[in-house]
Length: 480
Ligand SMILES: Cc1cc2nc3c(=O)[nH]c(=O)nc-3n(C[C@H](O)[C@H](O)[C@H](O)COP(=O)(O)O)c2cc1C
Image 1 (tube, rainbow, N blue to C red):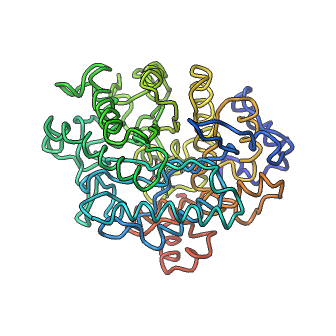
Image 2 (image 1 turned 90 degrees about the vertical axis):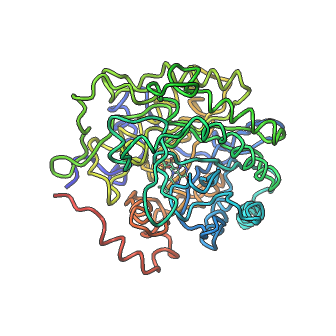
């Protein structure tokens, strides 16, 4: 028995609204859904583009690239389905590693040395257009970016396993990431070479036809880690100036190499002390007391590292504004050490733990973080994350957040794997296809954690029919 109510158990949106208000009286959802004439169909200007709806697709990798780092048939299918959504903003598509050693898994897309990397990227955009055509939406009304990444601490580029490259020795994450010595720390020379790698990848993206690149600063990957590198000596650590230096150098290099491409940033705007499985398999902050004050995180209160502190994230967003970067995709924490916060779910992945709180509270943390940013920076364009757990009520909450101006785009992550047509259904005023609604079984995370590709194994017939589906079901953790 779960000690929280699953979203599907609420009778209607009014009932669900009451539960949201229980968590925070400021939250809420709309009782009646509107079609494209309502908030979700409002136009918005990004640069010289007019986008005609408020749905975004989050980056969702599939651990399914070829060993040269090129898209496979499964990758192309996923991008086709991103297009099928009709969402006007395709944020990043999936993580694309700027160097092969910075891949998070051996099947991650990367620019590597393959002469075909550019063709691979063009192929992804082509699939987006095929999907959009299938959905019957206008071809010119969307804006697509490519997410540029270096996985840093979570690099695992070959079948040999973890090969972490870090900004600084970390009090709680070194052991989890397999860091054994200072050899994992990137040298100043290695860091100095990175802006050129990002620039080369951005140029490839520009030549392939992408409108923007996401200089990824989230989920514990390299550029996110640099934002908390207070203990790193030298030019790329220490004070705020030092910790943001690498990011600023990358942006400058990208602009020089590919001046026409826009830049966006996916940012973990707050973090959480690392959790692990405790009593009865439930998540617990692991060793919190003995790590106080906790300085090794970005956007977290050092004296209570379960609470956000937006002072530095706001300083960073203000820096972005000054640098002329207005596109920000807000996310929280990391899937490696606080998955319940990053991707709220009813059922944990195989390496996770039972939710320590009602997952709706974790969704609320995403919503409230986005609201805080929008209130502080009304002219920036923010994409919100963490909506998939809302399930049947996702469109109701989305409509409320957009109508009230709390966020500019509602991003879809796991929901797009099971139900890519959700945005077109809502905008056309059609009822939800309940059988396709993501129920957050976390199989899409369990698969890759166990060396298998990602996909919606419970609900997408393509993945349900694969032999891996049975193996993944058997790996689902049971509550003790
Ligand atoms: C299978 C899977 C792959 C993901 N791949 C990426 C990725 O490549 N880049 C990224 O920034 N986030 C990635 N994420 C995180 C999602 O973009 C999103 O933040 C998360 O799923 C929460 O949103 P949701 O509640 O709509 O699922 C991934 C998540 C999942 C489950």
